[in-house]
Length: 171
Image 1: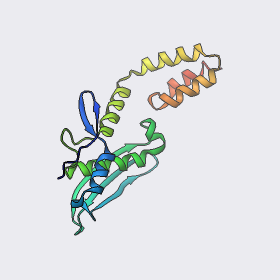
Image 2: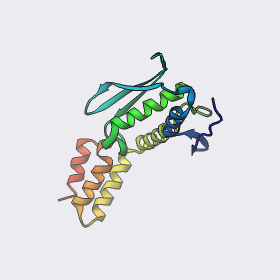
Image 3: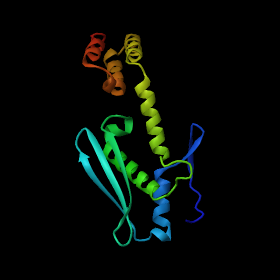
Image 4: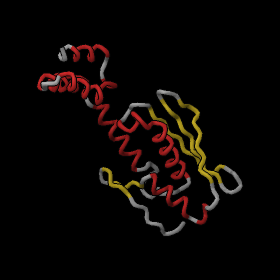
């Protein structure tokens, strides 16, 4: 490998390489000239996506693979771009399995920041969300706008019963 210096992102004191850095390295290095990045989607529907990324050499032999799974709406980016996000993650993992940008971790900066955001979202108690939502709606003059704002942010975390309870404050 060359002496390429990957740009990294510091996440909680550890350096991670971003997927775009891995792709840039792969595309510019002479040793990977004419190699292929191939993606396929064994699962793709309106709710979720699984992507398999493969890296093939000039003889069309698969040298490395990476997989990713994303759920539509599970994060802000996944509300509109869960397929693209899934493909990027799978490519990043395949490049990592090839040995690109793994000095500190196979996971990319993108994967780690997404995982941390999901953990923080999952650890937020639903009761706490409800308390905050009720307080927020009560404090606003435009209750319908406040309710819509809460739904945009927390709807997937709330039960139908909780949503119905919040609607009572909108009337």
